[in-house]
Length: 454
Image (cartoon, rainbow, N blue to C red):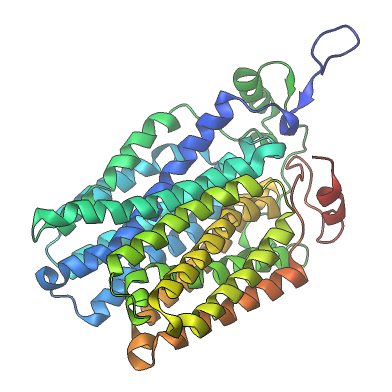
């Protein structure tokens, strides 16, 4: 676009063309997501390999499976308001170094207690990275491709989860201490991503909201050039923090952000963490092959979600994937007796749909909240999801032992249907919304954002 004089017309930051700077910030943000997917994916293999060495009882198995998720809860809740107050950049720049040190320390553990403490601390660091990465990448991204850029974080998470399975398979031949290498190797990707994070600037929106417009303009000019206008927003209102999220203006959006996240992760972690056991209970003899297929479909679904997330309304994506996932999981229960091949295929299709929907965990919560509440809102959504994930991971082996796998699957179907109903009733449309503007109450801006020309 050019002006009357033939010179390029200035464009708003939200409408800036995609540049290498945006890609760099996004790649920097994938580090924590890949690491989170890896450590959550590897723990099931580690527990199986370390049971005799560490003397793990069923109670310890449940605690270790849920430890990182519990740490994520604390990290997200504590760091979210801090990041809204002091900024995202410094936490974003150095939390992966702490993660790498804690990951490497797992190699030397001698007891379940030591491993539990380290897993809790790792989760704490990852909870911090969740809120700052999602907030920072969202606030730097142009709105026309914001969904796709944020979806790269989801692909990174799925990639880490799949790579964990492959690493576990490759390292399993290293003897009785193979599980130590499986845990420690998670430090490698965290160190690699540090080089991308050095020099990433503070969010231009956060700077403007905190009365630092000159710094915001300098960030825009340096990284995008003079043809892009910095955000023109007033300083942040004095009311911020967790209490505001539950005020009448924001509580419905806070509830949607938390509840949709919970309803996605409960079946995802319950079935994904113990996919081999689930498939074994369905009569599949090759647990390794079934688990491999499940993980391939997880990654495929995440990539599929990346391509469609900016092409359809967020609300339709949410509601549709919840109900389709419920139908597939219900079909799995009904068709399980037909044969193991049918069970594996239906289970893999379910994994594909759910993994595609996971993209919205990275895209949707940051779009629900204004800049002064974004990290806090993402923190609440993340914390709520980790409660659901930790509970489901801990209870799955207990429920299977007391009843059967059918009870677990029916429970997950109920959760998916509930998530679909909540989103159908409450979820606003956020696709294409400018982050420079003040968030309007649900229902007022939804129609405009969903109908804006793409």
